Length: 179
Image (cartoon, rainbow, N blue to C red; front, side, top):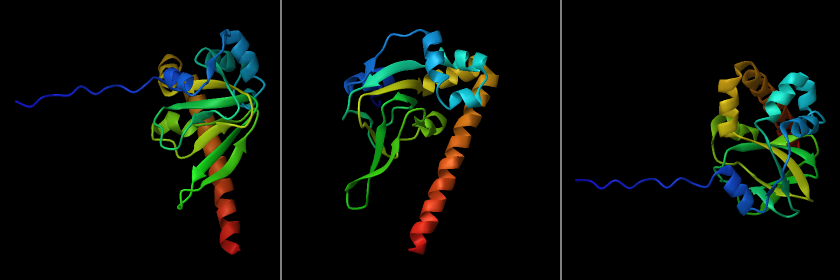
């Protein structure tokens, strides 16, 4: 008879963030909605949708130099930068760490993990003390079940952002190939 080995679940997003030095801040959904309203989300969603979305978010502070996530990590969440900034870096073919871009106030990162749950394609490290709103994949899925219209609006906003980034990357690649 075969012996079954129970899979040990990995840490929750909250546990992983805490292990990386991120501090969960106390805030109400209304306070989080006000913070979210100062980002690009206010252009994409109506106020009532911003308020509803805020109930699924958690507010964190990440100290300078601390990683939000590492390339290859499997924790599925996206973050919206409220204050500070994050450097996105990736290992090249010779294992050198290369800074790809900086994510500044009002921008989001990690959104692909909400859609596909795949491992991280790059690392993100706080360039300074950074305040973030975090939406986990689990909360995102719950939001979609609770409020399908809002879930679709958020998914559409994420898809539009990814499409814009892909267009920028394609343009940069074309310029690189010309040189």
